[in-house]
Image (tube, rainbow, N blue to C red; front, side, top):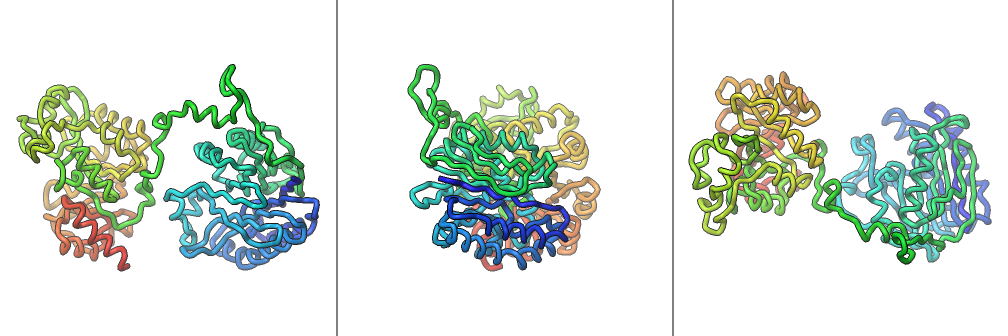
Length: 536
């Protein structure tokens, strides 16, 4: 097989768009029938940097259809398989798309970039919902060869490589930009990808200028890691010939029979040692849609409140959030229980923070709910994180305790960071603790509480603004108005209500613009919110 990578000139000066686009069209004209595979870079329909939405839309209007028609024509004229990246208009919006054309110039497949960058996610015209859902590895079989894909930002997510390796791919197509990385870094990434997937990598990018040390590096790399072609920052095209079925096998450890590198790695993989991952992972708080339902103390109509069964039941049924309360024990452990006292939910007595953790373990926290739960013990915060980190948004109510020293707060923050959960939690607490958290963990979202009296509840929006909170939490027993909700929204603050346990109340709060409904009856209330969303 003879593969060709095309590396166009790229400019941050949008006025050069016509010039750069002409170069792309002429490069496709220079392709010839000796080539079996041709690859163009990401965003071939936006040949220069578009600095605003208007410029982006103008580029698509002027160049998208023309470059795709030229790609199809080139594939047919050269009797080659051709891959090019441009925007496609799909059912739910625009997608960053790699188009595959066969030797007859027919469109035979599309690959959608799996890791859209933040600007792509934020763009209202773009559809990125698919990137938050599980889907199989995209594999296209063309002329007996199996193709896989990476687009630009996708190259940084090495955890995907082992999954791609299991697909027995022959060639990975990389339509890329990666304009800020050095040549050495890009070569390292490409060699790492080819070696770890036992696959040929054919990557096309753009030149940031003939003398630029950044970007570029359109290249062809063998499964051994050997670089067969590397354009650096040169504008033009490069070719290399290789046998796409040739693989690289090495001893699977000293004295063992040969195996592909990924097969050797799979023998000892320990996925539970890594970051939370898999199909149970949900969107982080910042981009999870509203309105939501928050299961208050878990699904506590079917299992004891603040217990793993209650949280698990809510999450399994689709709860976007769970809310729970944290207290410190006398010896500095962090446990989840709503009340400061033990009597209502356990066979213990007294204040939770006056007991050591070992003492609390002697009490039964299930039997008062029902005999079926007899023997449940008090739950540590770390046990919640260990089981549900990144599976749900956690509304964490840190109970006021004087003195609430920094060391306890630091321990709570450290546990959140240890379980990679910063983007999946927010703190709901008193004003005094908010001020400490703003200093200790400014990156973690905070929610202003209604407070303990009418005066603080009436000023909740103003207090949220003063405290720098991104959320606030109204309570159903203190009056609030649609104007207060609107003012919060105008200041970038989302609104919870604690709580709604009837469909009538839920519908009323949704009509007022409330973003998150907290409830003790998750299943019934979630159906009301689901119907509301469907009717919008």
